[in-house]
Image (cartoon, rainbow, N blue to C red):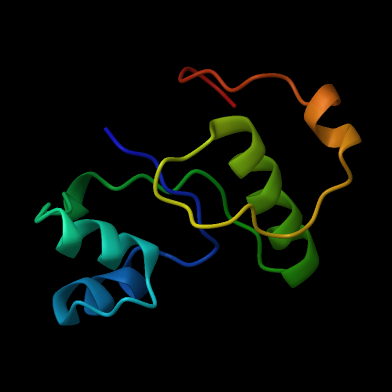
Length: 93
């Protein structure tokens, strides 16, 4: 299973995938490799309604999970975060 971390919900990614829009990393991956996205099994890992905390959570999740599809690391985190964040494990965080 490939991982992707983003701040939008999966609904926002369905249209770019269907239209082969290269602005979306998920669409790029799915269309260039002819992969079908298993939309019913997409998992939302967190919710945050405020912009800055959402950006920080996204960046922390990218650092911890090291998703294969993401094009960038999101919001810039100070390098110290890499040494203080516990590693990701599939059972919890």
